[in-house]
Image 1 (cartoon, one colour):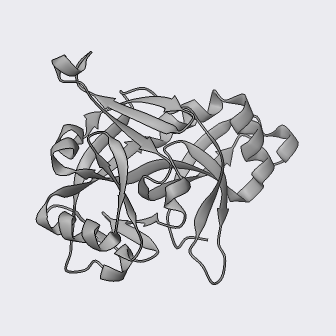
Image 2 (image 1 turned 90 degrees about the vertical axis):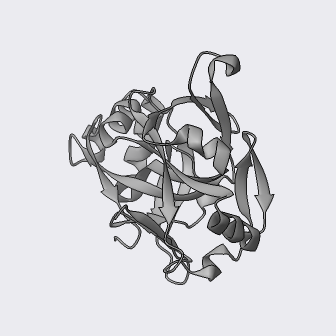
Length: 226
């Protein structure tokens, strides 16, 4: 049986991995900052900056199905940003859930490999300085879920390679040919569009802050982890 997503109020579960939902609307692929774990609220990434995401041979996209028998209706109690005709549109959570069940909307996962994000981070002098300063709470987002209209989502399916163009307002994701007439499709993943995300914790080349100059490894940091 294919892996399915289970959506809860404060996280999303897919393939045994728990993704964050706290302040998802502020997160993009390549967002970095500090992981916060408030006692009475959802864990979240406090976004401080953005790393330019790698090229298409590393970034992938695919449609994922939702297990509605295990998904909480209350997980859709707030508005959801849905990508329609390539741009985000806000609709009620109740309507989003209804259209997801009917197949009018699909959930799409965009991901960058750990090693791909490591190379991108190591090329960013400012990001490295910031991440060192944040210490043990430093995190990078490398996987995000986005809700799209079904016909558009099909263009971003089956682990298709994606080109990302970083903009001030977010990220433009592009698949297909060299132009729209040749099958090229693009979507704007702007502020408010991310539905859930996964973080990476950092292994440095040294233990002391003053000696940390390079990321040696990045490891998945799931919702619920300390």
